[in-house]
Length: 536
Image (tube, rainbow, N blue to C red; front, side, top):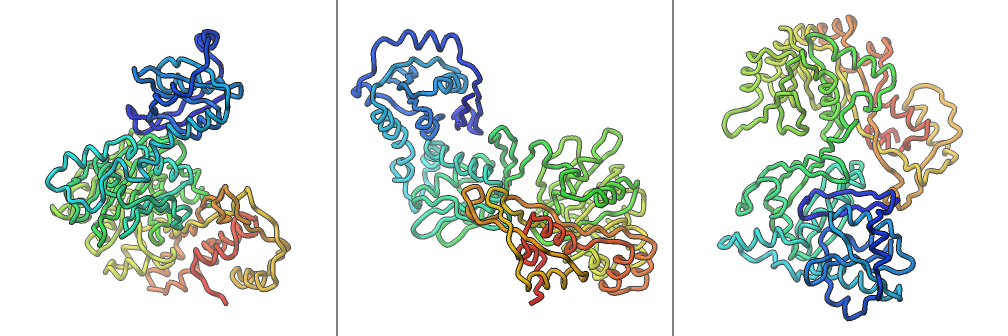
């Protein structure tokens, strides 16, 4: 089977085509080949923007356009002919085939024809200098932004980011160059570096796709775009801010593929899944998810919403910003500039007869009070707080002047979470733990541990030499039991609430992380980094 992935002009989001068999017309076409192509004929061929040189080099096949627009395929004895069928399916056109005797000549032709297309980007041949003032002629900038090389550059960067599992893509311009960085497993890594001349057309292309103003480069802007990449629908949240050397753009990649927003795929154990499922099944009350920025809170809440999203429930969200757009859910985007903030939106939606309300974040007293009242009057409220653990959530609400008895009566569960990097399975090796590491694990857990082996990643191409590939959540689920309610009413400290919770079998995030360390899924160093603990 031959597969090809290529970016198209007609469908800039990309297409994926696979061929299992050769078509009869392709075989007939091969039989009709009577004479080899000459090197002079090769010079007249022009690249097809949808195709990629790496694919053609791997399959020993050159597909290019002739002066009259017809497609020509050049092959050798080493060519994978099913690749021809794949290209025909992708382009929707017949390919006339010709032979060439020398494999080296074919390789050079592929590099020359398709290399020039890419090198024109890198050399700045098809783009203007990023310092040129184009305020007076935006049409020039729009034209450059839609040039095939720029489109291909953007699509390539997005495709690479998606393939590597990146959550964010950063386009940054400096005095001398244009840099692309991807946030992979929570850490930024440089993905590409290009001449500064490519910066403005690239940023403009993305602004156009995100329905942003390409003429405005002095003020921050936000926008959204949708791309279908590698057979998956990706929602892009685009943000720009002005910097000394130009605009910095950050794109959040929101994968809406199957299973992305599924409570069963959060990484909870059986007990944790049962507890969370039970909490969101309550007809009223509040479920809070806590953690720092980038800890996966939004994903957890949306997974819960997806479980709750059935015909007989009305679900309304108030978010800043709306990250995932889900069919069947009424989602409100906060717009502070026109007075549409969390409190004003909440006061309105309680009159919309909702069953479930999601509040993107409880930030102030007014929002907290409305959320509490909604939870007490027959609504299930889901929201987030910025606290380090679940036990601190109650005091955070009290700091917002919410009375303890209201908190005890309304909050059903608090979930604290972090995202921890997992050891790459391709370069994972077993090691004998140092005595200091064993002692540290025992100190963290508070119980004697028998630790004979630990694991770490050596680094390989699959993980970008980092030793880690992918992330998983570590969770702390705190049901508000009668004992916890009594501690809240007594204004007990967070530490005291934790002691009560531990007697009732609550597992802390650190304990969950230790389980992942001992099972060989992550490292002790990564656990300490994520939980920000220092026991040295």
